[in-house]
Each structure stands twice: as C-alpha cells, then as structure tokens.
Image 1 (tube, rainbow over the protein chains, first blue to last red):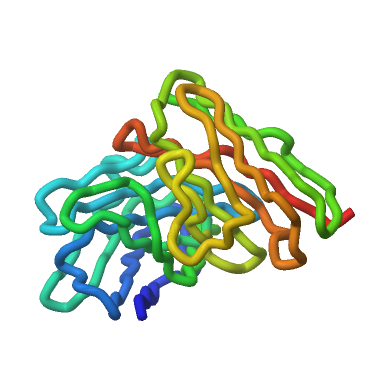
Image 2 (cartoon, rainbow over the protein chains, first blue to last red):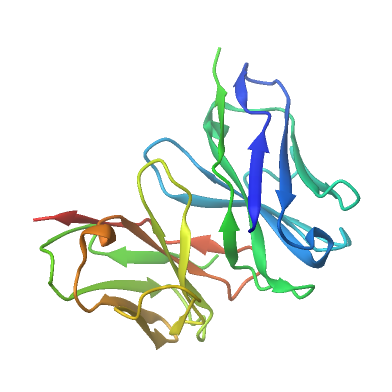
Length: 122
Length: 107
C-alpha cells in the first residue's frame, strides 16, 4: 500500500533553515508528481510546492518562492523540501502528498503522509 | 488569484441528516474542483475530483456537483464517521488553493 513518511521537522529560529524529507513506498515513485502542503495550527490547508515526476518542473506558492526548494531523488524514492530564511509564519504541519496522475500532473493529492511539525520561534 | 469561499464555516447536524456544503470560486474554474475530508490530527483524504467524480473507495453517500463558480458537496445520510472538516480545492490554476474549510459537528 502507498506510504509516505515525512521527517525532519522541529524547532528552528527565525532566519534559520530546515530540510524535510518524505520517504515513499508502495507505488512507482518516479511516475508521479509530488506535493508539499502545509497547515498552520488551527488553520486551513495551503499549497507550498509541487515537483513533476521527473523533476523537470517545480512550482511554488508566492509565500515561499525564493526561500524554499523542492527536490526529489527517484533512486531513493524520496521527496525533499529545503526551507531557508524561515519566518514565524512558516510554522505549520508539513504534509507530503502524491499526485493523482501518472506522469501527468493533476494537481490533486490522493495519498498524504502523516505530516511533520515545523515550529519557527525565537 | 482565485479565491475559494466555503459556506457555512461550521455546520451542526445529526446522524442520518442530509447536509450540503457550498464552495464558491471568485472566477470560473470549469469543473476543476476537488473535495477533501480531514479529521483532527490526521491527513486530508480525497473524496471527490472534477467536481462530481467519486474517488475510489469513498462511500456513495458522498456526492459533488457544480461547475463554473459554484459547487456543492452533499452527504446524503450522515454517519458518525463523517464528522470532520471538509475542504474544497481548485486546480484550474497550477498554483492551486483551498477553501477555508467547513467543520461538520454533531448536533
């Protein structure tokens, strides 16, 4: 069965950096686009970033553009997001999610990880 | 940017009730709309895509309708497992976004 397991969350000071990972299993990772979506405490869902199945294109929310970098290693079945210049407002649970489409991006997520909490605080 | 607005923000209902949640887009998104269910402390679950297509494994009491700017999610007969928060998501644009959520509570 599809499994997505995020790791790397924690507490970081404003201006700091963090790299999240998402280990995927149960499907052919290299055939699917992947998403990062976040949820601030008590708030709704927010798109963060998307990467195509082959890493050829990457898309970012305006709120993180220039600070976050999404990447993937298809040989390791792992998705990443490098988060730099972190702000207090980046505090959230970060979910990785699998796109519903095979090689074609649908921008819908049909499987999600359990999330990892990132807290930006001094 | 396309704004997605859900109503109501909170809905109180009883087991067996028929409930409807509305999602409005600030401009036409054709049928590029999905619905997700999220329970506390859990990841979202995809219920409906392309406005009215039921995701595999989702009970048939869930249905979606609409196109353009107005969409609805209907649960025909509420079950105890359905009390959760529901989000609509537009994917007309590549940088997609969600509605603010509708919390479905037990009356």
